Image (cartoon, rainbow, N blue to C red):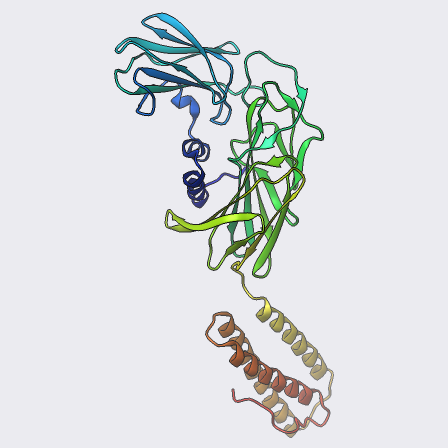
Amino acid sequence: MKTLKGWTCACLGLVCCLYGGASLLHAQFQMPDPKQMSGIPRPVTDLPNGTVSVRLIRGSFSNNITDFPVELFVAGEPRTAKTDEAGRAEFSGLPPGATLKAVAVVDGERLESREFPAPSEGGIRVMLVASSTGGGSARSGPTTPAVSGQVVIGSRSRIVLEPGETGVSIYYILDIVNNGQAPVAVSPDFAFDMPTGSVRTSLLEGSSPQASVDESHVRVSGPFPPGQTLVQVAAEIPFEGESLPLTQRFPAALERLVVVVKKVGNTRLESAQISAQQQMTASGESFIAATGGAVAAGLPVSLSLVGLPHQSTAPRRIALALAGLIIVAGAWVMGRGPDDDQRDEERRQLTKRRDRLFAELVRLEHEHRDGRIGTSSYTARREQLIAALEQVYGALDSEDMDPGPDRSVAA
């Protein structure tokens, strides 16, 4: 299974800074174990004095447990509040110095925080983490029958592209959101195909168990519980040349198009659906961070990477073609009878000349690929070398061994 590492984490951090939600995204991609953080009180200054906020999640940071009762024991006396859409239950007006302890019971699992004193200044945040069960997504209280409805691909979703020499790695980080209070069964199923040419499609660590991959086909089985269902997909798309068009259709509406591209050389991102983009640097590497508007379900997301790093295949094609000519010429020579001394000497000289011209042609191709010779000089010199090689092969093929008028180039 693939994981997001290195530059991918850095570019996702850029998106966090640009579009908010930094703490959530950092948690998703650094992949800490939420259980290790469960029950540990954390003083903060962004809450009113004497306030405690208890966040309740199931398994991972994206799975908030909403509309669920949480108890806060204040000097042994319980107070109860229900979690909101962000999975947080808030308790205010706590007497400074009173001993506090947060408790929630989820599917028979008792979750408790450490005991801690009520703050006199600022507030306290604490998180309680239930074990992952079922689909691994947020659930609200008792099991509720699924209803027909729709989900959306939330604004925290993004497309991440990493160009390489022979392929582009593509990552989809999809935050599938059910905004209702009951599980939703969508019709048709939430499924899509990766862009044409994709290979090695796989799910990234942290994806919902509801997701599955069959070659380049991705499917997320329902029903979708209230809240978020995280699906992370990776694939690679081989390419030749300097550009690669990408087209993707999602089965649900995309609330906002967010694309991050690792900038390699002169790589650029072009799309009529991108309304703003800028180049940024993180961890010593450059990235393109781009955003666009909403995209309706089933409509294409069309992107194009331009200026991709690639190696010219011209030297290989020329070498193969000339190698074929050499083989044909060699076979012809072997099929002939003995020649006199003069004819042998002429053939030896032509062969040496052919080898020199061929070597110079290969060297010219390398110099042009590396930018050491201009296009006009390269084109003119290449035409001379090809013409000279044609003359030499014509002479080798002629019965009288006469190469004709000298049209050679100095080697």
